[in-house]
Image 1 (cartoon, protein in one colour):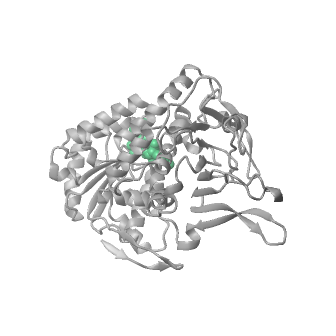
Image 2: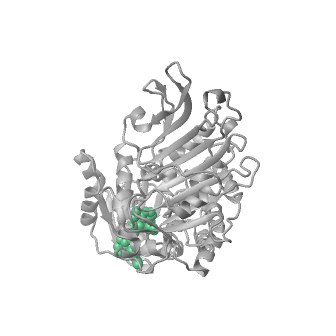
Image 3: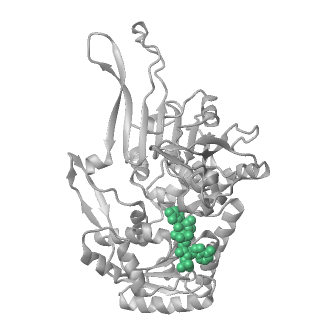
Length: 510
Ligand SMILES: NC(=O)c1ccc[n+]([C@@H]2O[C@H](COP(=O)([O-])OP(=O)(O)OC[C@H]3O[C@@H](n4cnc5c(N)ncnc54)[C@H](OP(=O)(O)O)[C@@H]3O)[C@@H](O)[C@H]2O)c1
């Protein structure tokens, strides 16, 4: 392990970046969008930063008739970097195998090809299977890998070395997630399984844990005695793009809320784990998710509301209504926005509202966690007309820029007693001056190192679905239109009344 202690902008940094050993990476669905946009660039980033051994290979797999040369060309073209020699040597390690995912012959050939490539690239048995295919294909691939003796579940020596990365969405409700977990558990050991949620690979999301548990000043006030409410926003200013077909069957609740949103909430609210060991962190996350009070869905909009965008203007351009997007049903009731009020029934958080919202085609791209503290219990400045002092707000900014800011009150210079709100800001890019590492590279490295901390365990996936299943059932059984909001909106009446009925206001999306 390399231990370095450099100083950046007057800040002592202690970090430990461990490079991965020799690994073979088999990507199912390698002709797809995710492979080209995220997985290959993510792997190259590790290779460029010497965080991956030179002894590796990438074997793309799928139905497409693609030669090694064609795959190498696609891989090289997907990388943006000035070092063309590095790109060339990386691309030379890319190969392709064509076959149907349900065809046993593919897996026979895969076994032989892995043996050959292990020898060619001097990889000693370390192997990752990355399922980057549409979710209905997960069970068949997992089962076929096992049937062909490629999962190495039975071999306690090997199982530590053979790992399976599974993309989201993991199931579309509680039953399907349980079934998928059960198929996977019959073929792979849980210690081999890496359910990816790329939000957990983002620097600021990981920083929630450092911020909370590597400092002493925040944890004593991180509870119902000092915090008035927490708002989590994942706002996008884009529509469904090329994913309309998938999205129309999924909606915001399944696409973002069940995974990214609840995972971020768990990190903000969980109890301190005893160590940063994978299962300690995952135990605490699971306990927290289990403590979320079941959502009240009757009467209709007590705890959760849904919306869908109509035509509107974003950045001066007119955008079509969701129902007019290509691939979306003209009478679609799919929610492109969802907002909820959650409560965590435990000692720390009893009756503190967590307001969460996510939506497409909103006023701006903005992902943040805002912790609003309670107002001062008594203002000593009433005589000066300052009886309603604003509360302190701590904002963890996750997208587009990553950083942390704290709002507090300060005196305006002058002879009169004037108070204003100031922001104490920390921007990652200002301090570290580097491009933020891509979430995918971090997670790929962790999977190669066998570190499951930032990956979802089977239980937290199921607990999250258990919370949302009654909502999905209610929406399915009562198929009403969502509330409509114009593209480019900050908010709309139903979302506002959810929070205003609890005496709070949404933060602006900017
Ligand atoms: N793209 C993203 O931004 C994104 C973000 C988050 C999660 N994900 C998840 O990552 C996975 C891959 O995403 P993707 O966007 O790369 O998917 P994709 O482009 O739709 O599909 C990946 C590959 O799977 C194969 N495939 C597609 N449909 C198939 C079908 N009906 N039957 C058999 N094979 C089929 C195709 O390869 P062959 O024809 O060569 O077999 C295709 O190139 C999905 O689970 C998705 O939910 C993607």
